[in-house]
Image (cartoon, rainbow, N blue to C red):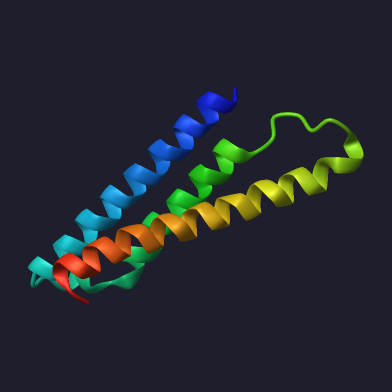
Length: 100
């Protein structure tokens, strides 16, 4: 279970970084107004990555009913951190390549 979860987390991070990099490249190389939208280029992929990270990290069944909130908050916190780290990595790469 842990190996599958780790694989899905890495796959999500790589796909998010790839999609974000391609969207930013399109923004830099295109003159179309559509690609100038921060919501399309940054926010939409980030929201999708956060939801995917949360889905992967969401506990299937916590050990006790008293710990349900803790498990869910931990999953959402780890999803937020995973999204932030992935965002930082891919923006560092694309900003270095294409400029800001």
